Length: 468
Image (cartoon, rainbow, N blue to C red; front, side):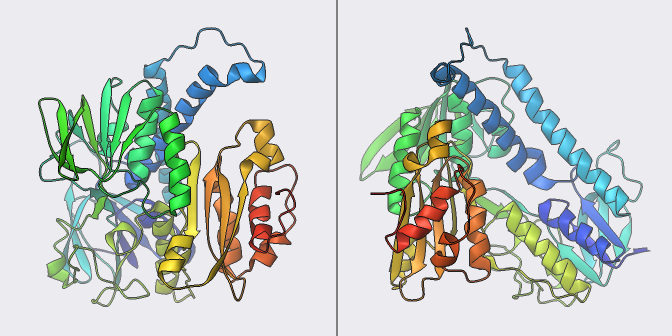
């Protein structure tokens, strides 16, 4: 039996970051990963390949629709679909290769296979198929600390089973071998809108069908209204308040207020969320408890009910986001090593990487009012921002939500170009309990998109410089 200080089950962003930090702190670490490569869903079939496709297709749209406005004549614009998809694969290959090199440099033992508990302190690794390569697969490993970082999988609807051809998950939708003429996306969250945007830009007729009254339901109504109009202007058809009932003979059916709806589809992308991946771990052998959603139950230090067994990322309650999993992993590694780990789950940014992007942190205006919190709001349109005008990225606005009494920033929502980058500034101010006054008095370089965030901070007290 091989013995380590720490075993991490799962090599995604949460797992490998946990392992890396633990190794930095001097622990002898093993990572067990069922894929042939590290990086989990995010690097292999999720965040990274989808962002590569989003970026490439943004260039395509810019060349077709906007290059001439900048005085650039490109002639005929042609799509090389195979080259576009190859670039996406190359990006993934480079990143997962880089993670493997980092693991090797940190002397982390990486074992390719699937893990199952045999006791609270030991696991058995079932080898991958022949040829997958893992000299330690099939071994039994033990450690005083084991971290469950097995991530999540796409939710499959009982009446829309994934077949990988007509009904697909996001795993399939980043690798179509051709452009589907008609794509129906079930679910108006980040994944559905991002992949819907990709295939719409490439020529698919895309319809998004959402059960709730609005897409990206966690955002404020004013943000969603503007965002919805922008996506519709780009060609996406958006149907809200529609309950999907089935798919047969190339037609997706739904109901809205008793009326039957039909959407012809060559492919149906089901993007209604993700579920924690806890199958096959034999958690009962270790005595680890799950909640009603089959998430691993943990305390505020990510400890399970079994001493020495921890869980992080998508497999526990909370937002299923790679950066949240990473912070979980760092904190757990530090706690295991006797350090003062820290994580603030109230300040996990969320981003939809469409064009424009929409991003948030903290609580929104609608959420604050629902909780009875008296708030002051500051908004600033990118149409009045010099850098946005120069770049032609004037859609959207920055919005700051502050406590009406203390001026402390409670949250922010940004709709606009690079909103995902801009939201981090607000999160930083919120981390130390900053006020809109702190944000407004922070010097921002000119001309930058970030000046709109500063102006939104000023607007809370009705003193934005560049607004009427």
